[in-house]
Image (cartoon, rainbow, N blue to C red; front, side, top):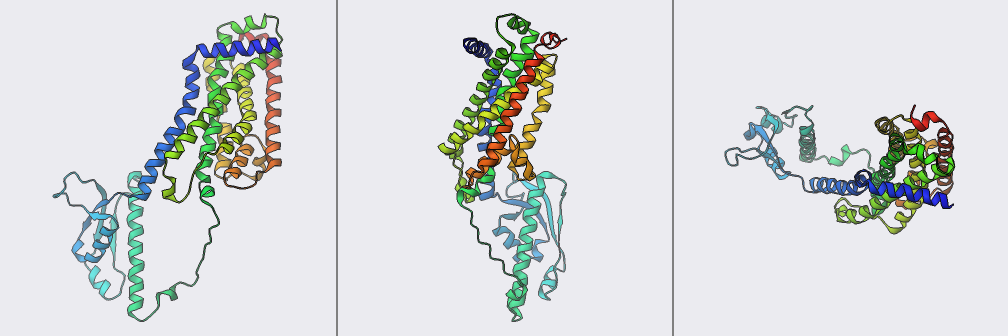
Length: 382
């Protein structure tokens, strides 16, 4: 035990000396919640207070009522003479010559939207204009029926009454699902640099062979490295939890009709569930790094390996995974966390099975590393 403690202490001291490498992994845990909150604040501001849309309207005099309606909805005819710096979208609404005549005869009146729908910057504005025109068309259609003594409700053959049983907390589950994804991913990112440095990096510096020449077993060496990397992975998880708890309170979620609350109970559950995930992250990345023959090769391999937890986590976040994935590592833990934040009962059997599988895979990778380090080809990178 004393040798194991000394081995872990040595790994932590080595990691602390290379502050840039360590912080490179922790920057993700620190910066991701702040960036996400900034993006959500901008998005909420755009959704709740949409900016005026300035477009070109040809022959506006043919449909003054339509132009006034669009103006009330924030869609204005561009007037470059009054405001030369006005941001005018490349959208042209042309009102046909027979518009007024067709409206008077209760016939379909034609308007033409001229725009490049392949331009991503215009797609949102085009959809907004189309929706407002459709709303105006529905209102005019109702007025035509009323003028003929017909109740517009006869056109509504089915009345759907949606009774939403969701709570403000459960409505925020989708957002928190993305947050949980970033938290789980931070475990892998925080451990990556140290995992590479303490395996492929030590081999390039010829210190791995020197360590094995000391009176310690290969198992103690592997355990020491796994524990040290796992601690850094958990440090990244703690950082992203603390920063998320503070940062998410500044986002005006109530304007969208739901609330986001990183509670203390959620943080405790996330940390407990994150322990086996951190163990898997450390053993997986150490195993792959020992298989690589150089530091750069290990970086390339781990970049590809990290797509596996990303895919599993995203599948659980967006509910696109088959039911069987709820029983395997990463996606099983994330699904349990999402049920918790939505106020549902935690699937304990599912969580237990996925956590046990995570630990079993981690132990298998540890035994694999122990076996690899008994080979001279791995120790010396031959």
